[in-house]
Image (cartoon, rainbow, N blue to C red; front, side, top):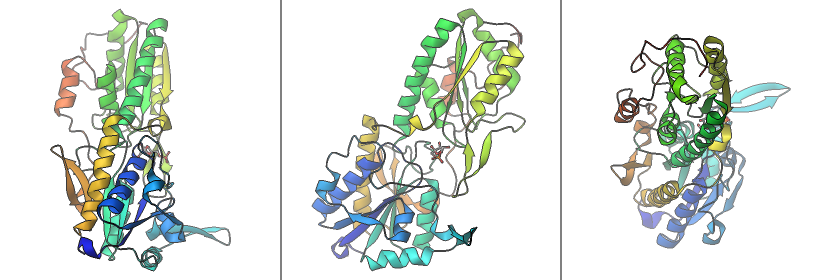
Length: 375
Ligand code: F6P
């Protein structure tokens, strides 16, 4: 569909929230209204809004002042998949394919396109809807930075900033008390937040899912900090041991594993094996909240404008993406085909190793360090 035929578009935010969502909405609405003269409606609470017809018009004045605001004015949920809609019938939970209702509702609003701002789960749903004929454009969102085919997702650097600030604070208290401080950060199966926050905060140890840790090496690397009297470690929530141990708590409605608690498990193991005084902090949803940093505001603004241009040029089934400093589009199908993980031999990992940061694996830890004693 050429831009002259587009008159009205819809937008929704799906999955976990992330700093910069409002900045994307603002930029998309401004570009749609001023550049193309379209009307925009915003569906509330992700795909649930599309199914239950919860929406509101979004004009230029509705998005004024949104650039620095965290969260999403449209609301979001990671519990609604139109292809596997959960409802209760006579006290029993039943799953139903409601995708046709979603498509009918879209057409009943005379929409010409739907912009889905979401992570892997929401974009997979968007792709399935596109296969059923819905003209969809995606905008990649996640603090985890694990979406493929884009170099960065907005929200990631704000989360890294929050984690870096936490590491800075743990350094001062850890040093004062001669303790080992462990910070657990988010990221699901990817270690991007842990790796970049660990580099920015200068931690001694970084544990990421992509490099399985050996508890003996973890202990050795922290005992090697003995001469400094304290140590700081960052652990990704999805970190796994060489024997395959992780900490998960079932799955969410989109089928993704729920993480949280590996920091406590590691803290207890380290304290028991080494006698070190260990404290654990789980940063949790602080990483998703708050105002986006400058980088995320700019990237979100570029993504929002590019999403409008993608609609105008009929690039349905595509997602906006950052590649070699330029924002363009790639097919959602390619982007969701695999999760973007950290290559264990990447330059970032090598740089961390070069400056003496341990990943809890045999590489880089002097085996001469004894496995006992306090710092
Ligand atoms: O995908 C973003 C993310 O913040 C993950 O890092 C984390 O595991 C998950 O969402 C937590 O989601 P929930 O909103 O269900 O707590």
